[in-house]
Image (cartoon, rainbow, N blue to C red; front, side, top):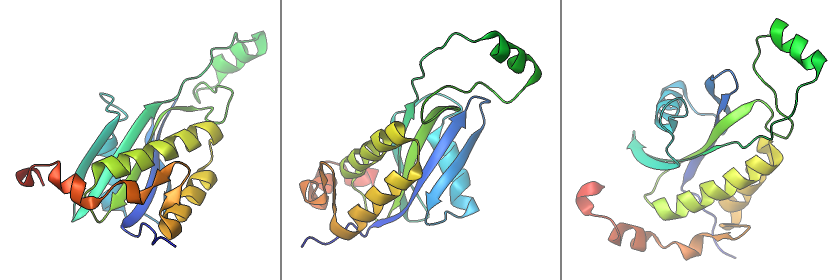
Amino acid sequence: MAAGLSSILALGIIERDTNSDVMLTWSYPIIDAEVEKVLLSRANLAGDFVPFTFSKFNNQWIYIVSTPVEHEEEEPTDEEEEDKLSNDTGKEYSGPLGRVEAFSICMLCKDYNPEMYATLCKLFVDVYKKTGTPINVLQGFLRVLTSGKVGDFDQEDFPARDALLATSIKGI
């Protein structure tokens, strides 16, 4: 049995809704306020869109994968038009992420391995985009913590040595 991926400290989901509010909507385990502010600024959902970014803060590596949510445009009914005029809560689309325009999956980790964590974050992005619930993301996260594998992801495909060799030591 393979050892789990115990270097992951926390996982979070940041969303930008139809009112352009950006907030950390879910995390496991809890992320303290100082780190939350850093995640919100580095996810950059309110500014220029960056699909993947990683950085270091307080001896923790932060890996963030961001994606827009594609919504199908529907023709509004007369009743919806009236509600829109009297209601200032933003547009709601059909689908699992009705009021979400973009979101980010964020990981706080002990080690440096951008390729591995980008792959894992992208897998969680796909799960969250399909389901719209963090429960399925949490299931995958716990599976990775215990076994090191989830779906097509296997931690053994990403040796830490390769990540370090591919990067300039000055960059770390």
